[in-house]
Length: 104
Image 1: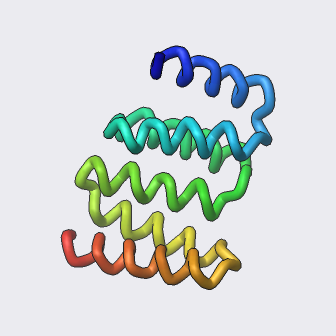
Image 2: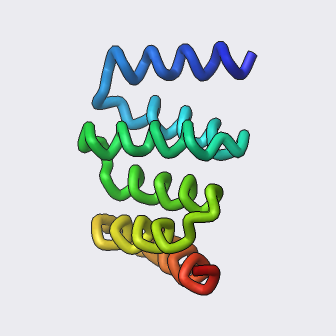
């Protein structure tokens, strides 16, 4: 069932590359399933498509953290903070960046 959902979401993204919900849903599905490389690909595609760069960078940070690439995760979170306008999101990203920096 999960593979079918992943396939449908990828088709949604391919058919509408400016759809943030498609990227977010598929990326979160991969993150929850610990499919770090696939999550990285989705969020990279989201970033390249310029669909909410702050969310794309935050997702990349989560994927890189899952891969154990702490320096890149910290950098992703810092870049996401610079592009975010939501104070709560910025605070959450700051915590994630600090945690990643401690693990470098």
